[in-house]
Image 1: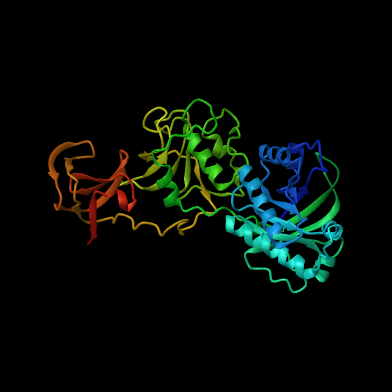
Image 2: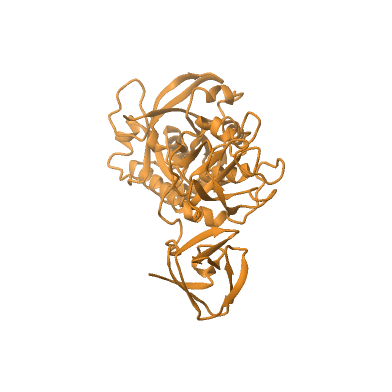
Length: 431
C-alpha cells in the first residue's frame, strides 16, 4: 500500500508561524529560498523553526526570473549555496519554478519567453543543481504543462512537482500541490497543501563501513552539554543523515535510553529491531546494563570473538570517561533494542571500499614494521617479535583496544589500526 505524506510550501508571505503547532499536522515542508538571486527574507526563520519542530525540509524552490540559460544556471548556483548554508543534506530537492510573473519580467526586459526558452532555462538550472550533488526538479501546473513544458524531457532522477486543484491529476507526478487554500494550525491564513508518496523523501545513502572508519577515534561534543557523551556520536549520525534537529534534547532524563523510549520520532529514518544485529545498527542499553551506568548507545560493528551475546561496538564515552569513538567488546545482554538506518547501502560514496581483512589466513609483515607477538590477549606478555617478511597463520581476527588483531591459538598480533589498506602493517593472504 502506498503511503502518502502531507506537507506545505511557504515563503515570506507566511509570518508568525507557530512551528510546533504546524508540526502536528504535516510531515514535510518546502521553502521558497529565493526569487532570482534574491534570498527570501523568511527563509532562515522558517528553516530554523521547522528544524526545531522536527519537520524535515524536503526541499527549496527558486522563483525564476532568468533571461537566458547562464542566468538560470546562476540561479541554480545561488540556491545550492543557500541549501548548503542551511546544512541541508544532498537528499533535499531544489526546484525550478517558472510562472507567469517570470514571463512578465522577461517581456518587461524585451524578451519573449517562449516554451523553447523555458525548457532550456529549466534544463540549465536542473543540470547545474545535479552537478552539486543535490536532487532537483521543477514545478508547474496543467496549463504550463501544455503550453510551456509539452514534450519536455525530464530525466529519471528529476522530480515533477505538479499543481492541480480540485481534479484528478492528468499527469504522473512526484509531489502534488492539491490546494492553494489550505489551513494548518499554527500558520495564519491560507497555505499551499501538498502530498507525496513516502518513497519520494529519499534518505541519504550511507555506507556503514565508511561511516565507522571515518568516525573511529574522533571526539565530538555536538550538543555542548557535559563534554563528550555517548549520545554525541549518535547525534553526529543524525546530523550526517540529514535529521532536521540533530542536537534536540532526547527527552525524559536526557540519558541515552531515551533514544529508545522516544524512538517513534525517528521512524522516518530508522527501523526498530530487537533481534540479530547488522553492521551499523545503533544499540541502546538501559541504566545498569553497561559499564556506563546511566545507559548507553553505540554502533554495532561485528560479532565478538569471545562469542555469546557480545559484539564489537563503536561508541564514545565507553571504556573510560569522555573517550573518543573507540571500538569496544561489549555484552548485548539487557539491551533495549536497536535503530537500523533505512538508507544504508553497500555502495561506496567515493572509491570502491577496501577489501576487508580476511577472517582467517596468513599475514606477512611489510617492510619497515616490527610487531610484538603477545600471549593470551592484546595486552598479554610479549613472547616474540615479527619483522619484515615474517609470516603467521591465524585462525580468526578481533577488533579491540583500538586495533585489529589476528589470533593464532593463544597468540595475538596487532596488524592495523583500521580496515583501510594503506594503514595495514602486514600483507594478508586468505587460506
